[in-house]
Length: 74
Image (cartoon, rainbow, N blue to C red; front, side):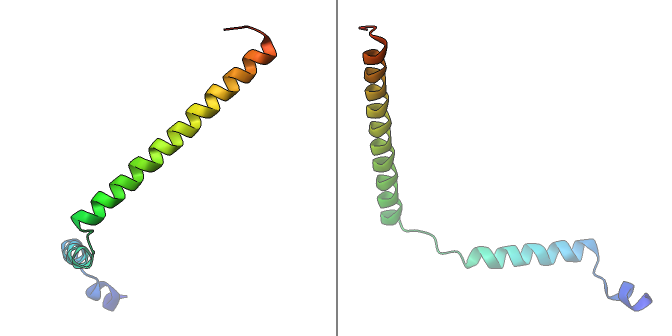
């Protein structure tokens, strides 16, 4: 029991090793280039526009169908 307690690191030593490990992991990250980021941004904007147009068309179509069923003439 006394051996286990003697081998246990203190809280600050554990925090230090944690932050050293974090820095080591951050150094392993492969960051995208500016060209990749621009390309990905364009893809995201395009998908948002297509999805928005699809939802808009669906909304207009269902609204027109509802007007036909309800005969509101609005």
